[in-house]
Image (cartoon, rainbow, N blue to C red):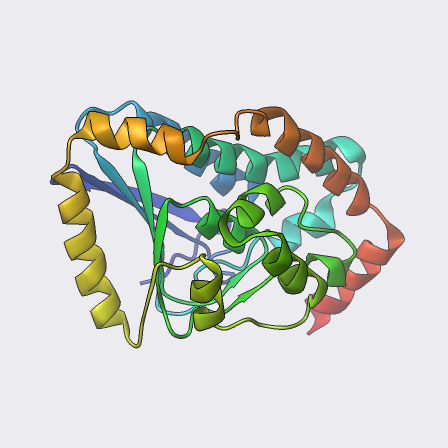
Length: 256
């Protein structure tokens, strides 16, 4: 069942050393700043929880995985400070996923746009269904995927992120995303997806937690500067969202 809360919802369940973190929002599981901040705090807490070995990140419902940033909140940004503050929300989530001592597995049951693609990219391993197409639509509304780009590029490479971001109105299907390295496995239905997610996370949770933590550090080597980089990118994006181009584009999207 999907949430009807305007600021979204976040639930965590810990069982057999697996923490399942589920986020939701009535607007295609998009992110308000409050929800971004709650997810960051939750991941930071789970990182230090000795009862947790693996984090499973998922979203509510059977439709969209994540529509990225909340359009309503983007339209309300009225000055540079507000813009930087909002996009820092995504920067903080990606950095918390990067720093998290636990392996993060993503369960992608539907389409992902913008920040949603960034979220998947920051997972250490991701499963998806055939319908989990992706799109980076930022340029079409006058901004750019600056904050999430380091995470996406780390996962799929420069050529693929160029293709994905410049074709800003085109969906890339799940098999394209798998070929580029975003998804590890793609399934033709939700049942098969969940069976494999359950099997995989239980297997991971049986491994030495210290070994997983040390290995994750290696996998995220050379990303230590992201703490500063993503914050700088948030400031640039915050200025772009104030442009007349973006205000006009967001208003047009809202009318659709």
